[in-house]
Length: 251
Image (cartoon, rainbow, N blue to C red; front, side, top):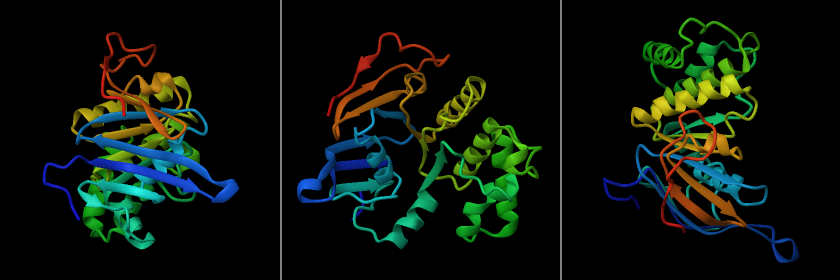
């Protein structure tokens, strides 16, 4: 089943996730519903145990829900098997993780090129697109460098280049600034904002209010349910709370 042509990038319908059973049962998500339109910049926040990480894993096709439906870029991925989910992950989602997840003994260029190798993109096209992605994140001259020759901020920029090189439906960033200093954090957030201005959908999972304030929409989770869903003008400097935040629709 697919959605209409004007579908949102993310359409989550009454998603529930239960771990264990009986006395050990944990209800991590309790009927969560979210729509994310193409070109949105969304931050998802929540304390430990809120269901934030579980929701991230479902959005990223790293786990499946116990109940409910999930449409990613119009495709119903709720019932896909692990192989089909891996294909969707590679084609539809650009991941950015806190720990960068770069291959240590592989150059920045080869790390960026890797998703296209899995997708069987021809070599000449891979090289052109990998170079373009590195230039976009300001590392056009560092393609031959290995991760241990790059700063943390530069490694995260390589990870962002790898995330965008396949032109995915969305960029999904899990605590992307958690291992960075303030200067590198600012650089990475400016990159996300620039990519969003180009029309890319960006979803950031974070526990940092200053990082969430840079997004245009904020969803807060508590005990597996959405307690807040607001749209606001992003805070350019990354500090404080946006003035005049307009409430969205709480779900």
